[in-house]
Length: 142
Image (cartoon, rainbow, N blue to C red; front, top):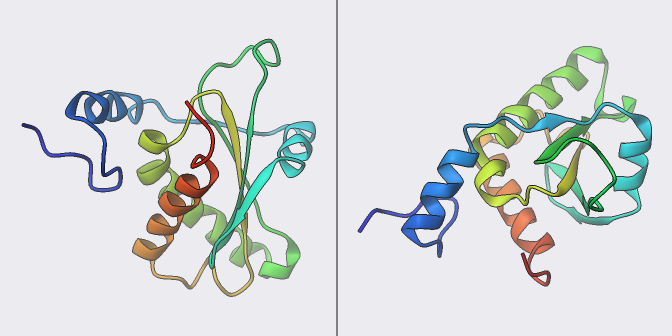
């Protein structure tokens, strides 16, 4: 029996293998303002280092299938250097954590928080992403 993915306990070996394959495909990045606005009206979970917003796309909404992720940090996070550092950390945490746990027909937006995103330990940031996804998808069926 193959060991399960450390961030996705409870998955069968087949699901873990499928998740590993899907994690090879990097998520698309949200760039259009209207996509961020739609996500802002959807479900959200606040964690110590960020806020995660998630919305399910309708079937004919976009040409892009799969996972889409957006990142944003306001000027409250700091100057451009601090905002970019916070977004880089979020992008890397998402790259390592999100694909096996996320749903392909969803848009996700991560909002950086002042004094938290850039200074929180990276392992804690990754665990918070996994926890936030579990909370968001707890009451919805795949």
